[in-house]
Image (cartoon, rainbow, N blue to C red; front, side, top):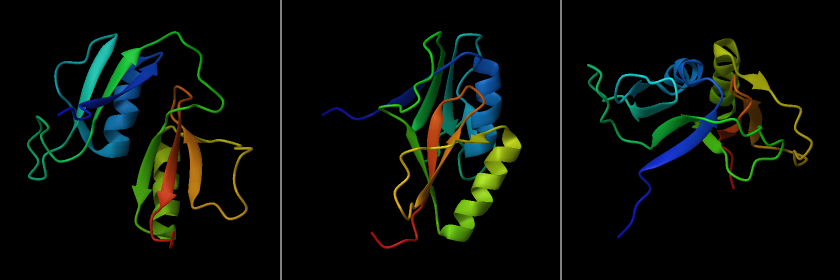
Length: 131
């Protein structure tokens, strides 16, 4: 039986991406950060570093591929409700994300599209809304 071991994201600057995503997600590096590769793990709930908490690994690999305007694959980050979503969006922007002028928003979106410092798009979802 297969399972997803890690989501891999291409970035132009691995150390910069590590700095953003560790703060954004509360993840920790699995190993020493390389110039071209890093694996981030969910921090253990008890603290102490080393990873091992529940959640998906995020691997960051150096890439020269241009960022896609409408990426086929992206991260969805879940917020508990609209207030949590708004607070998380502001926190992520303060960390270096930017709002994306998304031309595909529906009339009443439950998501906000942001870009990380490398331009990779991701969404912050209000999971408190009824589906």
